[in-house]
Length: 258
Image (tube, rainbow, N blue to C red):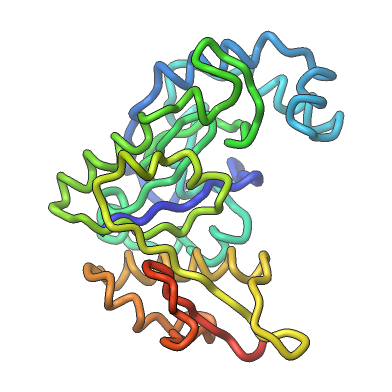
């Protein structure tokens, strides 16, 4: 079983990593090409392109200038430990044992606008480049065109190495759209998390993101290997509901109170 999640906008490079284990991103050459393209933009242009504030535009302008093709402990951090935000608050990777991290390295992938696909221990430099950014490159009008079939092919390769044909999609729609489903040699399972509010069960973004992190951690730490076993997930008070899980490949988990 292979799990995919989204990255986060917020990063933590101040806290020392909890492990010395590390690896290098698979698509370093593609990332360098994207950074070179982003260096063509001034801060005001980045502000418009990325829909961010002047402060964030200035910050990321500096990040792209400082980005190096060599990633080490001096300028980078393991991706799983560098990202923060709702999903990663649920994941709590800083509590993982070395064995958990090694298992995650084989069974978890982080989708990324700049890096395409990241392994948990890949040394990642600080950046912001969302997958939905309409950045024109020689490959097309946006980052979906830039990455093309590469992400699906990378996931297929890892699935093959695991001897698995199940991919658990715990990423957002924006990021999973970068995976060419027609090229993916796997059964995709996309869990849905709903909370009870105003008399109905609905997806509440903040809680759903944290639940994706909780399920990711549970899969990795419990070494869950079968898709049907996902129904046993009970993190954060969520419970599998068979009646709501009508759509094929979309098990629904409900929570009564928040």
